[in-house]
Image 1 (cartoon, rainbow, N blue to C red):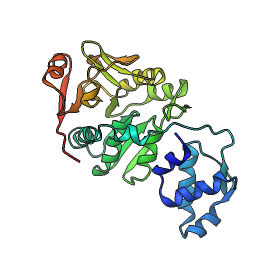
Image 2 (cartoon, rainbow, N blue to C red):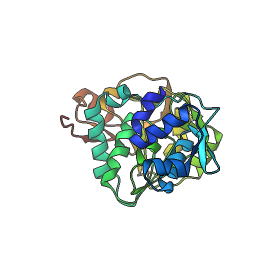
Image 3 (cartoon, rainbow, N blue to C red):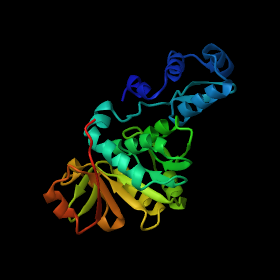
Image 4 (cartoon, rainbow, N blue to C red):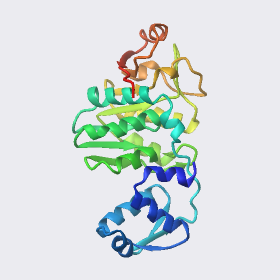
Length: 268
């Protein structure tokens, strides 16, 4: 995704700081804080976010553009808005019925998971571990959510962290609930994704929560779709959360393999 598209996730101050960096300027924390009439700590937080996203390299008292930065594919507006009413309904259900105050949860990447992250503003004292840069950017602005990024290698095709270090972190991670998404739900087979890197990571992510607290979410259009990489059987999760547009036929194909929670879709 282009730099202009990724800027849509940032506030106006952060966009203007990035513009300074993108024309080759090194910036000073104190100078930028004075220009925008904010505390230097605010600018330090902005630069920390940019550093975590791979955009800048921190310097003494400031930052400069990361010279090795490649273009990262963030979730596009098209991805986010596709079946948005279903995704919002699923997210609302998850936050109201599954996630509780003080929970420590794992969220993977994807547009439906992003809606869960947005809805976390309704909860208090949540800790989120994630491999997703999109989720990190969203939760950065929520003061009552503590966010932990896995680390590892950045996949420019999915704006998520992967590789041996990310897997090592997942193996050591224990959360109260794991919430994953998928690109396809195939009756009698299981859950699939279009990305082999995500598939490998998800196999380990499932294990971060104890049995009984493992959730998979996907809107009803994903049921019966085809995708390349299987990462889980139905028995690996405890509950599948989907939306109320699921058909009777789809429900019959799945109900004997996994418990299904249905989120009521409201017109947006």
